[in-house]
Image (tube, rainbow, N blue to C red; front, side, top):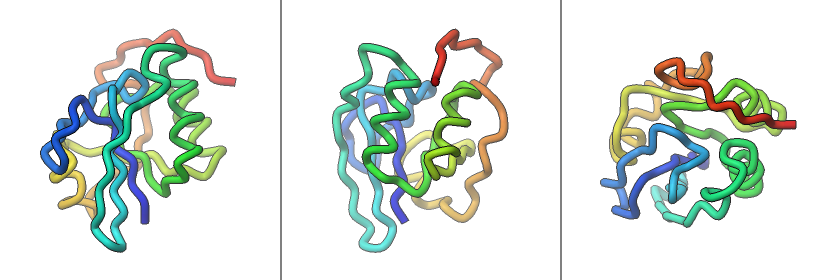
Length: 121
């Protein structure tokens, strides 16, 4: 199982999770089978936000996207591409990995009710 996590800094397993996936500077990509972790630069960070980020995420073929905040259109776009969106009260990659069985289905829009104003097609 491959899990993609938007993070603020490249600190390995200690990398802090970004509150807004589309503007995260990096992606942490964790492969559960061999417990490997790769941190990659988010190439869509400076343009298009969530919609372009979803396209980049899908190209990496994760099974799960963990996030703290995400707009409804981006969630729908992930689901249409077969990416399951999960969430939980975890603040680092290590906490997410340690709690894979406790992740919850992401049901709502952006955490805190903040509108993003973006549009995914």
